[in-house]
Image (cartoon, rainbow, N blue to C red; front, side, top):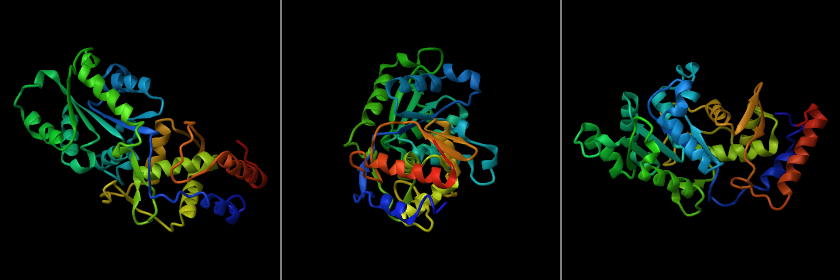
Length: 311
């Protein structure tokens, strides 16, 4: 990180705007993790996930759809298994909509239903209406357990074109989106990271977006260094919202990939250039009036002066 640009005076200026509260309610951006039958690209729009994707994005401009297969890459295999990777996606998501429609989704249901204290209040399980009164293992096992642990179970037509004819499903999704704007729903409460040994990953994403908004264009390496410097961290470890650690290291590259894939940021040649939401919501940083714009202008001027970088 270029100390001429991110000088001690510049860092001190950012630190002076650090939020003194320990937690705040975050109403955007929000992430919805859609799980279901594996598909190739040409089938997605007419699939159950594609239909719900379209329905949700019409309801909210600040809700971003997360799909595991768009994020998973072969070179992750030596570092993280797919189950842990999906646990990471579930952790950072504000809602998980799981269509019980394939062997893979049966496994996902089992995984989420046995992580009750982490995912129960986020999970919407969508089961084919044909099985509403059936005594199958799926219904009396993982579906029942998920429901007991706080998940919503919705019945709808999972075959053909009748998915959104389910009033229950439509109402459930609309209510979830409405809750995203609430400043009293506990799921929207984020702990501001103060301890480098316990960095809450869902809070980290919001904090990272705040720094990108001020400091872009910025390389991924400089962004990480800026985060640690502003926080006065030497290193840090990610934890889930209950404070427990992930079984496998979650890398910053996974998070950057997520933000790029949902089109919250642009990344070109390792440089983050844009953040794609405009609302002024403070979390880690608290600026009043036009103080944030002035901070950014100072940084841009220093980048132009010392590095020849312009927006």
